[in-house]
Amino acid sequence: MSNYSNKYSKNKFWNKIKKFAFDAGKKTVKIALSLFYCLNDPDTPAWAKTFIIGALGYFIFPADIIPDLTPPPPTGYADDVAIMLQVIKIIGDNLKKEHIKEAEKTTNNIFRNL
Image (tube, rainbow, N blue to C red; front, side):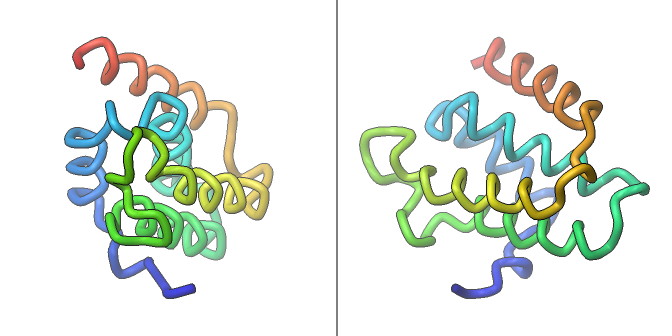
């Protein structure tokens, strides 16, 4: 698999969330945001951030193993979710309850406004 870390940026991440939250689905958005908040936590070690950046880069890039716009939604995001869940297993306790709570709060706000 290619290295997707060069596909990640904070702006690209938020653009993806804003444009494709509905297509990706609430579960996918919450997982991505959990990783995003973990990435931006100064307590998260560099090695864990490396994995997170790769996973979020994969999420951002639309032409991965299963293209994101594969119908019906959220079919195109199944591979993205699988990658992100694997990274969550790898980083373990570095993903804190606070990251998940913040992700849930943000996800609810996003979907409330769709």
